[in-house]
Amino acid sequence: MLQYLNGHNNSQNDNTDNTDNTDNTDNTDNTDNTDNTDNTDNTDNTDNTDNTDNTDNADNVKQKSTSNKSDNNNTNTKKDNATENSWGKFVSSIVVSGITVLIIGLLGANFVYLTRLPSSELDILFPTNEEKRPYTNTNKNGSSLKDLFSNDISNKLGRATECKKAQFDKSSAFLKNQYFKGIFDYGFPYNMETKQESIGGFLSNWFSNNVKQSNILLRKVIKTVISIGGSICGNGSLAELAQFILGPIIMLLTTGIVSTIWWLVTIISMFAFETQGIWGYIFTICGLFFGWSWVFATVLSFVQIFTVMFKTKLLPIMLNMGDIKKILKDFNNGFYLAVVFCVLVLMSAFANLNSAISIGMLISYIFILLKLYNSRKSTNSNTI
Image (cartoon, rainbow, N blue to C red; front, side, top):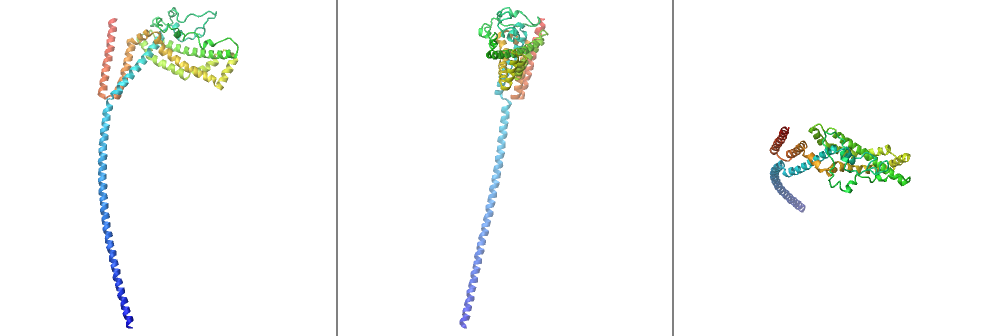
């Protein structure tokens, strides 16, 4: 019995010790929680540090953006100052303006020169009579035709006597060159016409006749335009100035017509002026389906473009440069070109220079042009 009681007491003592140990464990846990609290405090401190860093970064970003804006403003200011006076662009535009005025002047002078030519010489440049060169080399009697550039050819005038006259310069080196004169003489493709009744003869006649008829129609149109332009001559100096001003426009329009729609005129002429009867029509119609009629009209139109450009823009200078210079030296024509040049230069000045320089140039040009016009007017009154 006593042993049982002693054992029971010992058991209670052991439980007490275990309880104490449990308490100690709890204390340990509390200690750990305290450490965790400390860690939490440290974490808060870290967060505060991060917030401080973010604030500093935001300040740095603001400072950089402010400096970038200042740099951009400075750059834009420099660019604005640079574009106010772009002297390089201004000088290059003056060169372009000079070339443009020169082209306008030459085109105008060429047109005026063509309107002043006698009809006999104009027929050499734009022949429309298929019984004369370059379409044939003989007349109806079989005799050879006269030389195109014979000495008596320029004496037949087809204009009113009050109009100023122009002519070929017989002393020109070009008119003495046989190859140059051959351009206007009888030759390809008109010499392809033959009386042989064969497939080769049929094709040669078809090709030659269609080229001839298309060229004759085109040259009639050009001669009509020149004749209309020449009809206003003799009505004073302003009428001749109108010829000079309208000349470049008319020439460019003529070239534009040839380059855009003359292939269609060629197709129509292939039916309207067929000389080989029903077989010629059949061959042309088949060509519309299989392609050769279209190719023929397109290639011929391409050749005609260069021919018109050569005869209206370059040939007058080659035939008589002296008359071209006289037309350009005419006061009204020269004054008109001076005004065009001043306008082009002023447009460039307002686009590339600042307002002060541009306005100063405008006032200077107006003063110079008025002085030039008044001096010419006073000279004319003294002459009268």
